[in-house]
Amino acid sequence: MEIIGRALLLVGIALGIVGLLLMLGAKIPLLGKLPGDLIFRRSEYTFYFPFTTSIVVSLLLTVILSIAFRLFR
Image 1 (cartoon, rainbow, N blue to C red):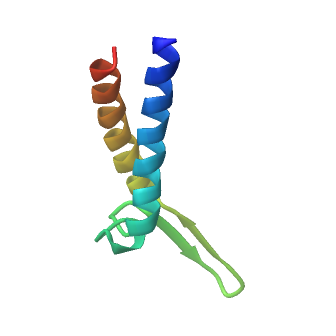
Image 2 (cartoon, rainbow, N blue to C red; image 1 turned 45 degrees about the horizontal axis):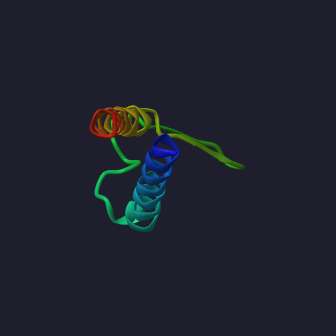
């Protein structure tokens, strides 16, 4: 039962962090506008792939989750 409680607590914290990031995502400077983010513009469409931003977010999530799993172990 203790394991389920810890898992629910971790999921709740993660959902809170994701919600906060979604609310404040547009206000974070340079998010989505880093060098290495790919933008292809044509007359009919625009293709945008935030390559560098994806790597930065992935590294941050890896560090945060690593710390969280060590704390709740």
